[in-house]
Amino acid sequence: MYEMVAEKADRQLLKENFPDGLRITAIKGHVIDLENRVIYDHWQECQPEPTSRIMCEPLGEDWIQFQDLSNDILNQCQQNIARSNEPGIADPTRVDMDAWARRRDNPGDLIPAVRPPGGTLADLIYRLPPLTFSEQIAPWFSQLEQKAQDRTGLTPVIWGGATDDPTARQSELKTNAAIRQLSITWVMIGRCWEGTYEKGCKLLAEHEDGVLAFTSQTANKYGKFDTVTLAIQDLKEGHYHFEADEAVPMTWGQRRDLAMWMMDKSPEILKAFGFDDPLNIPEIKELLDMPGMHIPHLDQRDKCMDVIGRLASKEAQPGPANPDGSPGPKQPSVQPEWEDDFDFCAKLVQQYLVNNFELEQGNPNGYENLQLYGQACQKKAQAPPPKPPIKASVSVALKGSDLGSPAVTEALENAGIEPPGVQAVIQPPQPKPMPVPVPAPPGGMPPKMPPPPVQ
Image 1 (tube, rainbow, N blue to C red):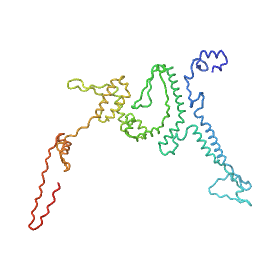
Image 2: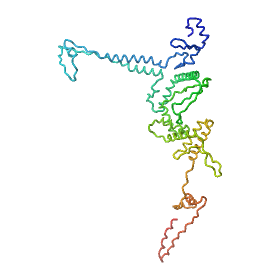
Image 3: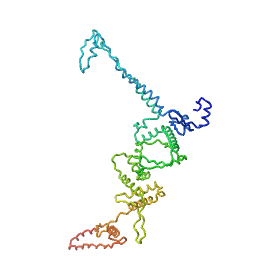
Image 4: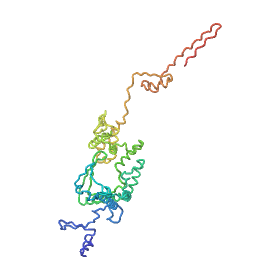
């Protein structure tokens, strides 16, 4: 823009003193400051497509032509509707036009009329035919809209309007393929935001000093609000960089469908993807979007996170002394309670320490206190169930086929009244007496012997 200055000496003065560019600060028309400044360090252009010029076509440029044609069609249709209310034509010598204008229409009313000689009543009054739309307007308008969608990439598939797919998976694949047409525009918008954030940090470093602290507007995965501390000196030295995600973000419906699709997988796959992770409970509940639904571990997570906050702010307590008087092992400042899910709390504390490993250096007392609490929860979760009390007496019913030393020993051991490895003494059964044959009478046949008993 220096070349627009008329005086050559002034142009040369500007080029020598402000080689990168000139920023003019004026108040009420009076110039108070001149500063050498590069405009690209403070202004960021947003290009919707790759181009060598800053002034490229905007995002809505592809729709302007089709929108103008659509407006013209709608305007013509509206004019046809308005002009279709044409007045009628009547013979003033036979029809009293003043009386007709003053008269109100009544349903089913009869109007006295005399047919003209050699004619009909239609010869007295004539109605012009109403204007009608062309039959080609509807198909032409549909083709215009389809052409606009194909050129811009905003097809009904992206908005979920295609319902001819037999399965939801096929519809999802078709939607992902349609979104690829918009990926170039998305990448260019991401580059614009990268430059905008970098220029914002540069301005912040130029006009601020010290340390800035920011609190996030949404809670993190632990149910707490993160606080970010920023040193302005790091910005002055250029220690920052921004990268935009090149992938088009998924809609809430797509994320919910993906979660429901994953829930049909085996437990091993779900565990590998963290579906059983305590920190993912709020995200899964949000995707289910069922108001009033109670998630069992959600309340437990909130309570355990409150305990974690108290443990991190205190140090472990000394345990009870040993019999010899030496100090016992340390204990956490908060003990697990009866209503807690010990296994769940142990996993949550472990995951918290993994994600906040810097506590070991910055807050060693709180780190040790959290470790002891997690170990106490793990110990209670892994405690074996209590043994049932030993019975004083027991009655055992055995069938004949179950008799024998191994079977009796196993039954007695299960009853808790026989030491393991000791064989029970089994008395063999007494043999049953055999029937004595009766002698046959003289001259007769000997009697039949009864069948032997079943052993």
